[in-house]
Image (spheres, rainbow, N blue to C red):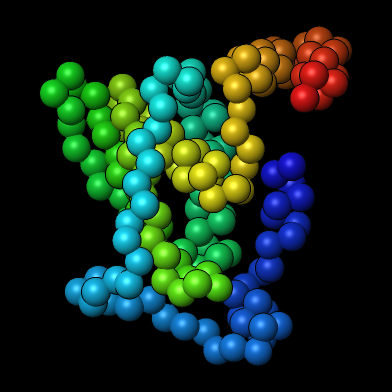
Length: 167
């Protein structure tokens, strides 16, 4: 599914604007008023298993690729919670057919990199770039990744087939 996304994304936004017959629009300065209200989504805590460092890297690369290809202005702010966790607020500003849109997600995790990756993942899910996995599907995906990391190819293939058949 991820490979299909990257194949369908244009190499640059200029191609999209040329196809639509419009000119490239630049984002307004931060000091200017925004026409649309910010839509904030808080990441569900119970539904998210902790991510491995490898998975965090994958999610961050996917996020950065989407942001660059679609000319999205992404900003992150961090703060510590009372419990000592890290909170990441990710804000996307972009244009679509309705004009300027601003979307925001808030993710809390045990560390700053984990909160950042969780916020990236939540935004990609919210915007439809990656599917939302159930807790069971995420666990199965992690087991497949572990099998691949341990060179248990047959086991990984069998688990992947079972996961795909169940979807």
